[in-house]
Length: 400
Image: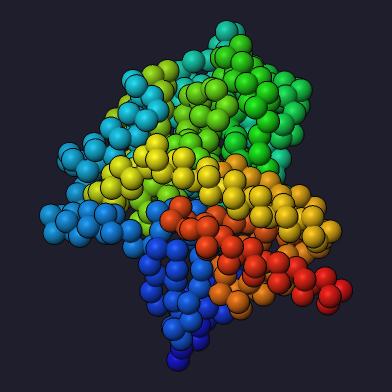
């Protein structure tokens, strides 16, 4: 049996996969079991941002594996301390970090932090605060709590009743947020770029107003940076584009360049909200993942951030040239190398065409092509991707 046949026999059908089985990867390229080479403009959904099998990350992994692979969280672990220190040096001077395994776990922890803080800091009449405002079209994970915080009904249908209580405001609409605030409200959670929602980018004024609104009402502001954090937007964290600081932000995906790790970073205000036993994880902060994360963060230098911004400008400029040529493109949206191309028709056939031509991209919301290339791509790679995409759009136009 081939890989597909074995999967159909042994694994639950939770992923609708493309007809590709990968064998190896390096840098911006991957090869399938038949030896076909692909240019990867998806990075495992913004995971391998430094490219596949980054040499420094791999070296750190191998070194840690030779020391120890697992350490129970009832003992101290230096790799955990090192990654926490690295994150705080780039964000909150007097903050604290909790280490999980995934983005959904990170957001789950952020929700618990907010609820615990609301329990400890009730409304002035003594009402315990637990309600969290999220946004329409958001995506925060697939656990029951993060699913409840996700503002897309299509994810909810089969799993109701959902955990209470999450309310949904309109993205980039501060008045809709104000209307939802009551004495039970404790926090607002937001993706500064809605990734699964279609590369929807928060307005700067809206985020400044949202920060002020949270301050005026003693609410926590939680930024979900699972997809947009860690240099993807041309800054270390997406919130740095907005001239604000959240109270809590969450990370995962790119943090260990391929190994599972999630992080919750809290500022001084909420850094000590958890007491012993309030939260935990058997595998959270795995030492091998933490070692990989330290090696990853060290490479996210000012030079790399500048490089990401420059490559993003070049890529988007070329995408807008395609927009001028093909009326089927409605809009090109980006913040750094987090790029979306909205089409006037479904994008599945475009994705399939690109894959057949050796370019890996993705489509979200049915008609929005999503590009999350690794930072090691070159202008030559961008030119190749643009050529393939242009051929796909021409083919689709002629077909119609």
